[in-house]
Image (tube, rainbow, N blue to C red; front, side, top):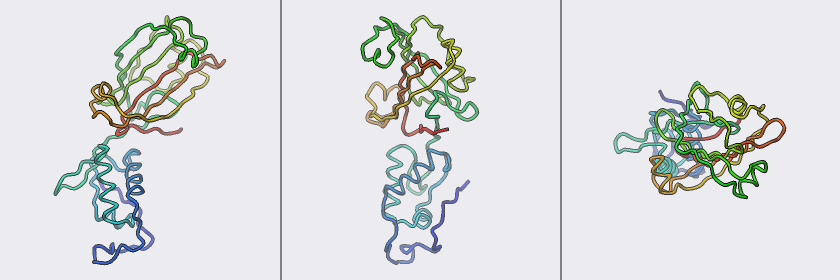
Length: 248
């Protein structure tokens, strides 16, 4: 399947294809890269789609140097595969997660949470700053997140009540509210979210099967009940080549 890209207002062959000058055409590789990257991450350009260089030059009203640079940037990020004589093919199958939730769409992005660690740790003052009601000890949970058997992220969660019954993450989970209520016996109130980015250290890179130094998206979240009492603080690291966030 070929997804058509918008044509410029003036339709015609690119000047370079007939020996002319690029003139005032759009020369920014960053603009081309971000448009293609966003289209891949949102699923508009699906996995297996072939990106034709000449078509991109014409339809994006750009230059060959800009398009080639943008395609190489996508290749460096692992979003496309470039091979001589075969061209450039979309490689990534993106996962879009709601910003204010912890699970994907159960119909399209079923996630698997594998519990790697479950232990009690002292409630450090940095944790108490996020969760004032925590006692002397809290529970630390460590998960590996997979989609279709492929590791896409890690999740570390701190729970105020170390004795709360541990609810397993399952593919049948829908949204955070019912999971929160089952876990803590309280109505879900709010979730505060922070988004950041870091580079993968060697240990995390091995866990996620990526190269050290690869970009990871970081999502910090604090979960509170309807009375404002904080029950959990969690942070997750996601592969930036596979995951993006969306608002509802």
